[in-house]
Length: 407
Length: 137
Image 1 (tube, chains in turn cyan, purple):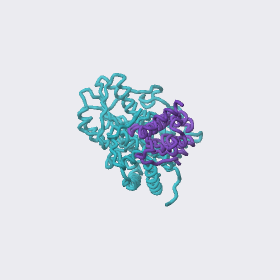
Image 2 (image 1 turned 180 degrees about the vertical axis):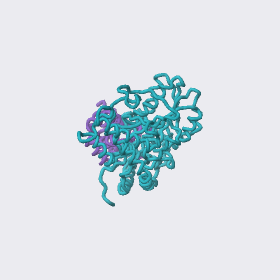
Image 3 (image 1 turned 60 degrees about the vertical axis):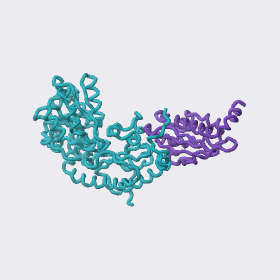
Image 4 (image 1 turned 90 degrees about the vertical axis):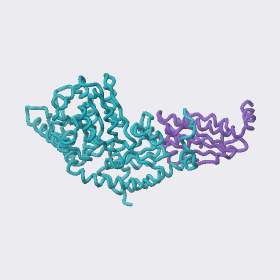
């Protein structure tokens, strides 16, 4: 086996390293020799140069998703974009209705924005996805009411990587005159997005999931038909007063370059990453009592979410210390609750506790995948030898029938 | 995030394994629930003098739960049942430097010790009288 550098990063869905080409462009916008000016300065060359860089980046972001650059608003990241889209549209169109629809497996930025709107008097329907993680279109249709004003459905789920059919969901929204917001933090730059075709009104993006910097994102706001939102941050009137605050030139330039590279290279990256992901799954799927979480067909290339039954996720992550992965186990979170996403797709708590998310990206190598496969086999066998649940399972005890002694 | 002691017990678990639970000299305690993310099985083997001469554990749970049960088996050996019942979760938590959010793992270990001893006593009812004599004497 060729040598690999440890630990191996397999948490690309959490964040990605910045592409060297992106970092170089960013650095050119920081020091006195570079384009450090305030893009809002209209009275001198420093400001004009910075503004030029901002607009070039806006073009690059718009190009990846086939949008008009005037439809792009810079934000601090997908969380802010989600807040601005959902609260901003709900506030602006409050006379139109007070009902919103979303999915239980959405990112917390969407769910918590919805909770805030509920406190303000809005009503929200939280739909449960099917066992494969996908939204049933009939259930979605049935949830829409006369006074439904907005629906928010994520493109790709961050934990299980499933891809929702946003074209079909958007078509239902159009028929019912419902504003459609999509969180595309996990999909932009990984799968094609064509906003000239897709019936989507608002879409959230960030740079750091596609080899760009953290702390920068964008919100797409459709112009035709025009969608209005109410600003959530007030100040100097930047971004057509929809999001005030001095524009972070280096961050924005970084996002632009990251999206430019994604547009040029994502098809090739996708093929390679998918092959590696399938190699990983082929290497572990024959282990007894191993389950894939989420649909495999409608799934982003870099994601593999697996439950290793009878092993608790955090102890598995300790055993896999050489692999930087994440777990749906309660023990890795402060809340002591297992993954809400896995529970929403009907995984019993025990399988949610036993889950590990492997997310790989463009720097993952075949040697790393093979190393991971070996490690996983060793860890699973070590921990199952130590697991009373595995012992019971092997003795034919039905764990459902056991009276557990809890506090 | 974890102390060296936790990692050491996790990496090199002491006394992982199982005794025959039908053996009359063995007491078995199983506590916790899969849905809660921790199940601990603790077993003691008691000799004719009423001393715990050996102990085993199997744990489904996080690193702290595995370390707490591993440490418990070490501490149980050589103790009488009464002495074993004096092992408190706070001592386990302190020895392993468990983070506050993992204190419940040490509570589970204390519960498992109590459950194993209760099981042993139930299997050996004739010992109850002697135990109580010893306790009052």
